[in-house]
Image (cartoon, rainbow, N blue to C red; front, side):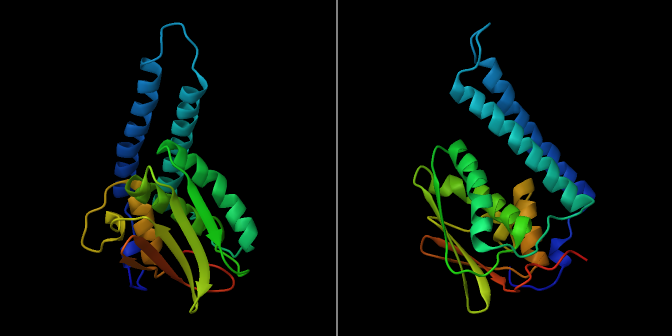
Length: 211
């Protein structure tokens, strides 16, 4: 998305909550299936217990995203030190990747600040959209500041997700969040060969708050 307009970032209450109910239903359905397939009277083995924990975690994330888009507030976009930003991102990415039975490798270059929980939330939602394209191969995420921009590169990615295609319909909550953040803050997206690059206008203080 190459627009600085906030128009594309506006998500109506009905749209956001409809997406939440749709995605949350799928999430809860997965939890029910895990319980239904266990032997009667048996406890949960570690692998199934981890799946339940992941489902609960995903459900909470979905509720937070719907609330942010519908009534606010959005996550903080203030600048954080590079290493702190990476260390806060990696555990959540690892948990997410485990759902696809793969891994994510994160590399950040330079010492410039990164835009706090807001960009981490965007990055996690975008990773959720592209992981099915890379799995079972590891997803590589590289970040740097160059040419006056934060740059995030994801690979391998066969094609941009629908959320980042201007003329495509997007109905899932993670997609709506990715689209809203990108539109609000003027993110630009480029896909070449197997790499998806997100360009974010650099400001030393981070991303400005939502007005």
